[in-house]
Structure formats: C-alpha cells, structure tokens
Amino acid sequence: MKYLAIAVSLLMAGSVVSAQDAANPEAANTAKAQAAIKDLGQSLRGALVAKMQSEGPVAAVNFCHDEAPLIASQVAERHQVQIGRTADRHRSPSNAPSEWQQSVLAGFAAKVAEGNPAAGITTARTVEVNGQARFRFAQSIPTEAPCLACHGDNVAAPIKAEIDKHYPNDSATGFKEGDLRGMFWVEFPMMSGAAPLSQNPPDARAPIVMSDAQRESLRHEMRGRMETLQGVTSALAAGDWVEVAKRAEVGTRGQHVGVEFRSALPQAWFAMARPMHGEFAAIQREAEGQKRVEVALQHLANAGQYCTSCHATFRPVTPSELAVAQQ
Image (cartoon, rainbow, N blue to C red; front, side, top):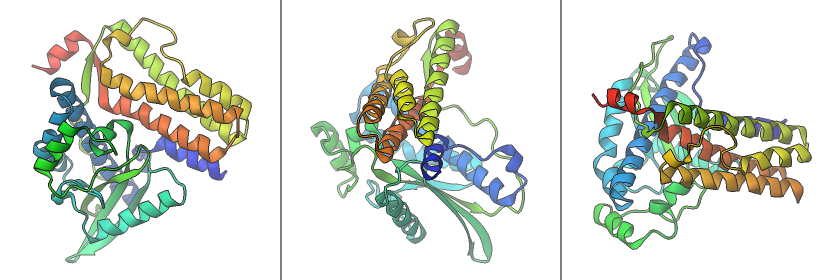
C-alpha cells in the first residue's frame, strides 16, 4: 500500500482539487492556489518553448530575465494572489526564498533525501500576518531533461556567457534530471468559504498546427500513454512484475495506430517523448531483472513528468482555430 500511495501521488501530481470539495474552505483555498500554479507553469513553459523554437536556447536566458517576471505578474493579477518561484540555489536575486519559503524548501529537500521523487510534493498552511489570516501553498519543481540546457552540469558556452551577463551570482547550475529544482509558492488572504476560481485564463501553451484527423490520432496516443502509466502503476501495486514488463513495453513504442501526426510535431516534442520511451524501457528492464520497486517507481515518475510536460507545453490546433485565436 505504501508503494501504491507513492505511485498514485506521482500520477496525480499537479491535479486540482475537485469542484465537489470546493465547499470546504481548505479545499477551496488549495484549489485556488493550484489553479494559479498551473496557470503560471503553463504560461511560462509555453512562452519559453516558443522563444527557444524561434530564437534558440540562448534567447531562453533573456526570456527568463525580461519576460518571466511579467508573466508571473499577469498570473498574480488574474488569480488575485501573490505567486512566484524560489529555490535555495536560485538564479535571480528576486527569486531568493523568504524565511517561510526556506523552511518549506528544507522540508521538500528532506522528503527527497528520504527517497521520495522530487515531483508532486506540496504543503499548505494558514498563518496570521498583521491580524489577517493568510493561506500559503507550495509545490515542488523537479528538474526535467529540458531544464538541463540552462541548469545542468554542462551548460554550453554561449548560454553560460548569457547567464553570467544577467546573473553574475548565479548558483542554479549543476542539477541533474530528477533533482529538486525549487518550488512554486502562492500566498493570499484566507478565504472563509468557496470562492469562484479565475475562469478561462489564456492558453499559453505552444500551438501545434495539424489536421482534425491528425489531432484525433495524437489525442488517442496521449490517452494511451496515460493508460500505460496507470497500468504500470496498478501492476506495481499488485507486485505483478510480468504485467509491469508487459505494460512498460507498450510505452517504449512510438505512434501505434491512426493517421500519421509525427510530421506535424516540433522537435521540442521529441525532446520529451524520446526520454519518456527510455523511462518505460528502463521499467521493463527492471521488471525483467532486479525487480526493485523503488527503482521502477522513479522511472515511472520520470515517464509521468515527460508525459505531463507534453500536455502542459503544447496544444494541437487546426489552421482555422489558430487563425481565430490570433485575431
């Protein structure tokens, strides 16, 4: 049951509290915080990918310096919250953690040190500030493969030069995939009851233009990936290593059926899809080899993060839909 709980938490990381819980004040506050974090994460990811596709990875450094703070301000205004990112090893001085954030980061780091995945760790607390009850929520940020271009061990010289220009005291390199990168944080006046969440924030995900048939095939494929993740989770919980290997093998393949859509996908998509296939292959090898649950779970967490990243970064649209959105 311990491993089942871990696995389920990995698959549900980043999900928003359901509407049926909104009548509960704590659930309503948590839902508001998670909605703001989801909006900020999608907005930053979509804009960053678009910048890298159009201008290259060096431009990503300028984006983080010039545009990311503006996006955070827009999200804060939409959701009527204070929101941001922070880390012990931060790049921008403006993202240095406050006292309460340092405490949360230390708690997150302790969980990771105990062997928990860096993804999906959250905490919520209510505090009194100047006589006002305030809700504080934080969610961990794991280091994903695309992050390593600017935050890894071997940052390319042109990128490193740009980082040094903007951030002479940078300490946000040397990370490895799966490390705890930092956290999102949200703070706002405590709501006493359910309150409507911000409705229909702009979709900042990068558009992928394709036909209706291609989009339907892609959606079918993405649903299949989620089913594979769930199938591996269930098999691990049952201790059925034969089924784990069988389910994981499915995740190692590319497009299965339907109208060909790969030609419409940007290279940034494959930068997440290929490592995901590799994580499923690692699960299969573990299931057929040493059968270590904790190792399989880590690979499952990684695969889930890559899958979620594709969902959060891109949105398939038809040419007509894109034309309407750009009006």
